[in-house]
Length: 464
RNA sequence: GGCCCUAUCGUCUAGUGGUUAGGACGUCGGCCUCUCACGCCGAAAACAGGGGUUCGACUCCCCUUGGGGCUACCA
Image (cartoon, rainbow, N blue to C red; front, side):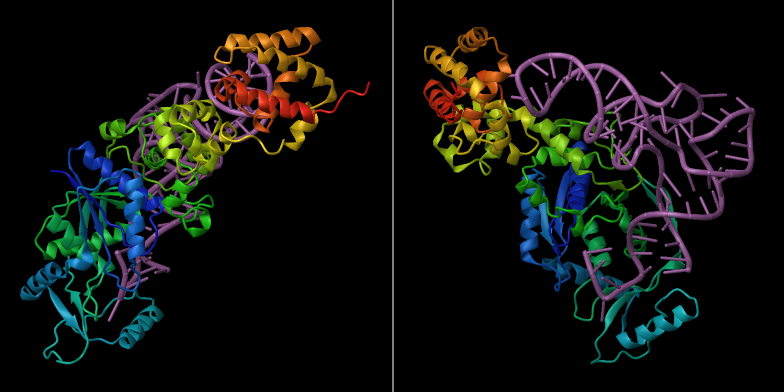
C-alpha cells in the first residue's frame, strides 16, 4: 500500500512551504488509496517546542489534511537504539571520541589545502575504547557511489567521496536527523518520500544508511522550493509566515490548498481543483522541476473565486470569527441573504465581514467623499418624494421598489444614479455597496425607511 | 571553494523536433451598469546567451551566465 508522510520539525510555525509538502504527500496518498502519516521530528531538544507542534497540527487540521497516524520521534528512542546496535554488531558504525576542537582544526587545515572538509576516520579503527570519554557515533560510509531515481529529477548520481563518516548519534545520546528519518521510514513502511529538493543531498546520505541496513530505499520525489518575490528562499521577511496567519487574514483553506498545489504542479490549463479533483488528478508525473515564486495576488484571486462559489451557509460558518458583534443578533437566514450580496465583492473573509456589517448595524458616519458628491441639495426634493413612494411600496417585491424609483426619476427627470447613491449612502454609509433593491429587500421596510430619513436630514436644504 | 538542482510573458504554468508558443494571476483598454464588484470582450507581455546535433530546434547535447540548495554533534 502507498504510504507517505509529512515530517516537520517543530522548530518553527508551519509555513507555506511545509504545508505544500504536506499537501503533496496527502493527496498523493489519497490518490493512490494509501495512507498519510504525520511524524513530528523533535529530536533536536534545543530547538523543538511544544507550541510549534500544536501550531503545526492546528494548521494541518484547518486545511483538512488529516493524518492516518501520527508519531513523535522523541518517543522512539528504543527503536533507534535497536537499529544502532545492529549497526555496531555488524561493524558498520563506530564510536568517535574526537573533540570538537580537533575537528575544527582538521576542517581548517583541509580548507587551507583546498580540500573539502571531511572527517579523517581517526576513530574508525580504534584499538582501545576509552571508558569515560564522551563520544558520538559515526557510520562507516560504504565506498560505493550512490545512484537513485527521482520522480522529478530523474537519475541522480553522487560520488561517495562527497561524503564522510557522518554522525548519527550525538554525544548527548540523541540521534540525528538522517538516521531517525531513515529508521522511521523503514519502520513505518513509507513507500514514497515527497519532500523539498533542498534534501537532495540528504537523500544520498540516507541511501547510504539504507545500504547499511540492507533495506531498499523508498521512491523519491524532490519537489522544487517556494521562493519569495525577490526570488530568495521564502522566509520571515516575506510577509505572513505561519499558515495560521492566512487563516486570520480571511483566506479560505480550500483556496490556500488549491494555490499551493498549483505551485510546482499542474494539470494542463486547469486552475481550480476541489478536493475530489485533487484526489483524482494529483500525480508525481506533473510535478515541476524549478523553484516557484509565491504570488499573493493569485492566492487572493483564488480566495475570491472560492468565496464567490461557496454556498452561503458554508461560507457563514467560516465567517463566524470575522463578523461584527452586531451580527450575532441576527438569525442565520438573514445573514445568509446578506452574505450572498457580498460574495462577488470580497477577496477575503475580512473584507466580506466588513462589507456586510451595515446589514446588522446602522451606519454611524457617512463616507466623506461620497457624501460630498451625492448628498447635494438638488436631491433633497427627489429624496423626499422617493421616501413617500417607498412608504407605500412592497419591500418583498423588487418590482414594487423599482416602481418607486422610476416614478421619482420621471417626476424630476433625473438619472438613477442621482437618487440611488444618496439612498446607498444612507443605507450603508458608503458609496460602494451591493445593489439598491437587494439591500432594501433584505433590510426591510422599517429599517430602510429609518436610514433613508436619516440621510435626508443630512442633505442641505435648497436655498430658495 | 566543492558537490547537486534549475532556467518559457513581471508571476504561476502548458508545451516533450515542425504551434500564429496556449492558459491563469496581475497590468492596460472596452462593454455591462444605480455605486462597487462580478461577468464578458480585447491588448501589451516570454522561449537567458553562445555553440553544436538535425532538413528543421523552446524542445536533444555541451559551454557560459543567472537563480536555488547542500557542504552542522539543525531538520
